[in-house]
Length: 66
Image 1: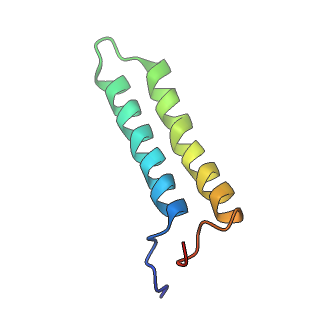
Image 2: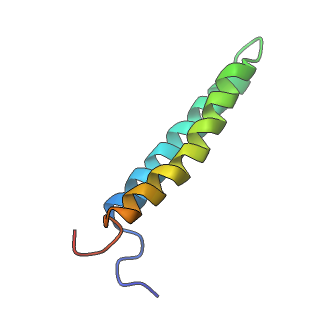
């Protein structure tokens, strides 16, 4: 098991972007009438979180020495 347990800038940023995506998508589904545009923006943010994490990890921000 890793020493840092995901406590890296890349992990925190990726999770934060993913949470924002889930919130935006959830709000879009709770509106009356349902906003599918806002829902899909939330889905795109969720996928974007993976991209953000991968880019930051390639930049070296996924190690415990930061």
